[in-house]
Length: 155
Image (cartoon, rainbow, N blue to C red; front, side, top):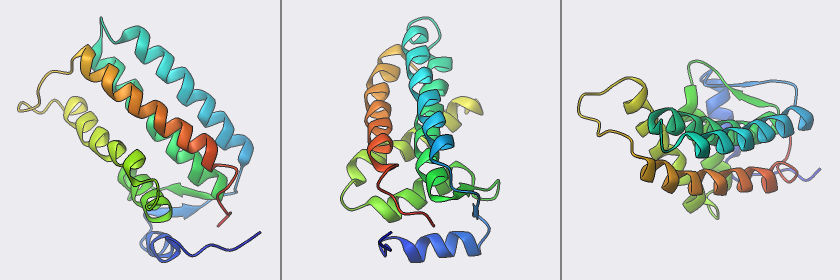
């Protein structure tokens, strides 16, 4: 397999800081996460009108699972120290450019989901329209992951 350089120093630094860890690379586990991500999108669509907050959490989780699948296939996983942010950082380092515009909504959704999850009093209520708009972005992230999993080198 061809070695890669884009983002390699960032991945090494994230591993060195304990925010990422090595795990057995598994295409099967990655593909199972992508299936779960698609199921979450379907569930979020069904819930959007009557439970927008729950639907948003599912939509975000679908995006997180999809992006984590890319790392799983590489033999990498976020640690509790790295949290969900490190998933974004690791993939942005490796895929931006050219895929930054597709990846960026994940970080915004992560922040929004945290507002929702932890009940920030300043956070506006999640609407079904917000869920619908972000589900389109989640689907783009899942498609990115589905295309990327077979192409990304193992770490």
